[in-house]
Image 1: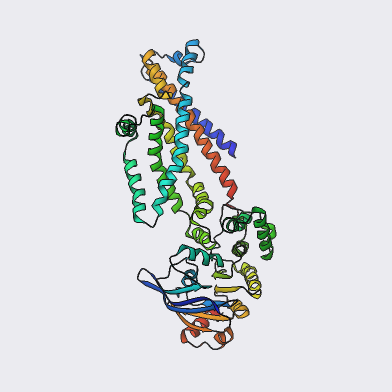
Image 2 (image 1 turned 90 degrees about the vertical axis):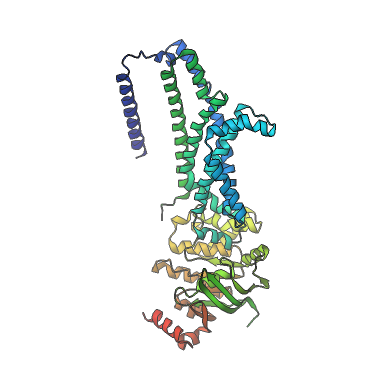
Length: 261
Length: 246
């Protein structure tokens, strides 16, 4: 059954790609395509591809770091939202509302150019970029965690309480594992989002995929072909992330076997 | 009777403007098996949920084994450690195996090693007669089996008192007996129990005392023989007439 689904998905993808190619071929009849600049069949194409994909590790490192750091930060921001103390709840709301309202690019410019003026600390572009993504992403993840934690039935809390489990043990062993299973799909969405937003780091000079593409466009002046290739690179990365999240969902679901009664 | 292990004095509880408990006085002796009955909404569940702080009482005093239940979290922890609770909806942890459901609290709060905790868990699983289900997940068990796991989970904490909040109300009829059998056994071993239930057969068999509640008040407290034969209050008579009619 699974292989059927995969085959169908493949066919659909091919259809979309073919349509896009036909459309591209029909329009702009006067344009002379220069796919050779990213063709793996020519020497020049190969070296261009090597140059473009040279940004891959930066993109992956930025995204992975940002995701790994923003998850615990997001959880840390979400928790005071459940406190009895209204001031703690206010801390949660203020952080989420403030950070959520700042577009990533201005935030990044502020962190990279503004924060050193304020604090005297100088960040290299990589650190400033990762920091920006972590801060921005944590606000969204805090909301995802809040929703997930709230969705756990009252009875689970009561069972843990009645067994004498402390607040941390209850969260760590009972509530959080169940919440994470439920929030994996939106969390996966957020991973994809972070991966795509890492392209903004090109603006402050991190040599990730987009910056590499920009450089090559300036020297070769083939924006259509090069940016198409760039989009394809992100597409492949996103597909890998999605597959990873699905794998995780299946693994955790199998672990739980909720369906059997 | 022996000295009371649980004492409630003038306990009141509000949910918004609705008063769920009105000036409740109650004493439970060590080893006493008490069955609480009454129409729905009469405050039975709220009563026992106040005893282990799942609900916070708004007035009066609750004392368990010499410790007063107040806002002091150490007092709450001490009292919860002495009281086990079984819920209508079982409330097993669905992401953990049966064995892990049983070992989690003893390992985290009593500092037991995994091996000790698993021995303890298997001992109690055998007592509730499902030793073979240890490695399954809750959703793979029947309702009756799940409730027996829940009872075993509470017993693993070696409580002095067990609270049962309508333990058979969510079960299919053919599974009620297997749960009641386990409870009867527990009662015969001398566990102090407060059981909220409509199972009057169980009450007749094991209860030392019957408590009848209505509209947040304890209307009547009597030994079961007297309570079933000749309830003192009109409301209890009406209630018994309704639930024993068929």
